[in-house]
Amino acid sequence: MKTTLVWFRDDLRLADNPALAMAAARGAVVPVFIQSTEREDAWKPGAASRWWLHHSLASLAASLDELGSRLVLGRGSPLEVLKSMAQTTSADAIFWNRRYEPSLVQVDESVARGLRDAKLEPRSFHGRLLHEPWQVETKQGTPYQVFSPFHRRVEAMPKPDPPLAAPESLTSPPTWPRSDALDALELLPTMRWDATLAEAWKPGEAGAREVLERFLADALSDYRRDRDHPAVAGTSRLSPYLHHGELSPRQIDHSVRTLMREDVDEARDEEARAYLRQLMWREFAYHLLHHFPTTPERPLRAKYERFPWTDVETLEGRRQLEAWQRGQTGYPIVDAGMRELWQTGFMHNRVRMIAASFLVKDLLVSWREGARWFWDTLVDADLANNTLGWQWAAGCGADAAPYFRVFNPVLQGEKFDRRGEYVRRWCPELSALPDAHVHKPWDAPASVLRQANVTLGDTYPRPLVDHKEARERALVALASIRAD
Image 1 (cartoon, rainbow, N blue to C red):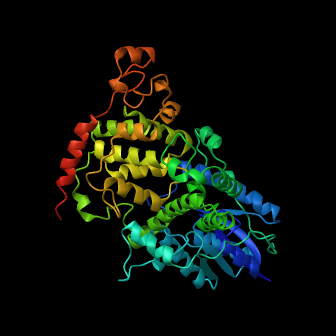
Image 2 (cartoon, helix red, strand yellow):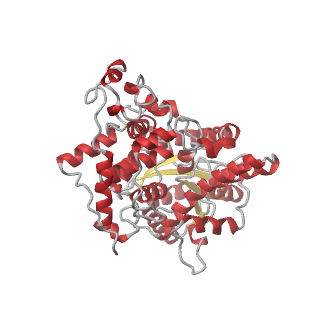
Image 3 (cartoon, one colour):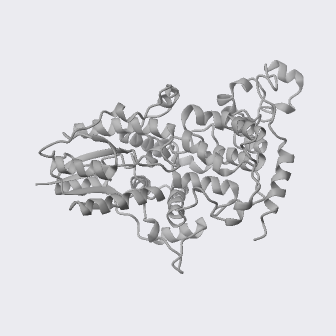
């Protein structure tokens, strides 16, 4: 009987896991997760992602136990840990599903070389995306930099195969290797600020299936109408499950398309296609990251290297950045989003765009600062999506927002949170303000502020900047680099 190590990383699921399925068909399986002590790049998992990872690993371990298997945890150099476990279990092969982040691709290539040198067989599989990034190219054989033609090209390609079923059982090896305890990985925060995350989320494969089923039953039929309104449960909230691989994009795509085939409803099908288009934005983000691996640190549009960003090392620059991080900008829709992020590890996508625009255009703080903050605080912190979103907001990436687009946080709030329900939830000090003033409390008459127990500059901050003046300053700065 042959024994295979299955190296889990960002694919913490049993269903539609190609590496696991192929290993199970081959013989005995040793499921392994390794916390690398070698990773020193800028994109190690942030605090919120580490919290999620802890609970996702616990869920995966429980699922494996039900199959008569177990999850083996290790710490150290991935190559050395894998070689040691292979020797203990007499494994002759190590399987994994591919990753696409530049530094992790280098790790996997190095591990594969080391395993081959040790006379072990490394095999990688396609399990994180619908299509490999190198499979989608223009007629000229170049990568896409605009979403619409990328989307049309993918739509014309053959549809992915149906997802793989989870194994019904796993054969154990003759000898199990030693496993570290989950707590030894020290993924949870030492100062336990994570209670609100636990209230908001259920990490793990079972939680992912529940969220998907609830979205398909309750929110898909009104997706286009509701997705931009943060007070409404109109989005799927599947992004953290996708990031940690508790659910594959193929499972989502298949579930949505099966619903469209089995229950013909033209109006609902339009909503479904709109949602699948959003899933394709994720594919586009990975396409860009693969072909332009420097974009997490550098703008895709080189002229933005010259942009006159605010120096956050100055006292004023640091004050403004920290006010944005804490949700104390004086603009309620921005503050509500930043507080939702801090308390739940998540922010509604429309509000992400508003908050990002405010940072990079109203405050002229570099998109890199925003990307780093999101990376540490989001439970769905995904390098490809995070990079695409922040470069879009700053106007320096692929398919970027036009340079002159500067979101007005008041108008955005009034349009997408008309009754102020979202703002009142996350900024409770404004809860008694009438709808007409909840998105611009500085315009409220003194009598209205008194009646609502709002004291500007005390119970709620005054605006950090005047938006009209900030917009003009941003346009001047942007115009200075427009010429190539």
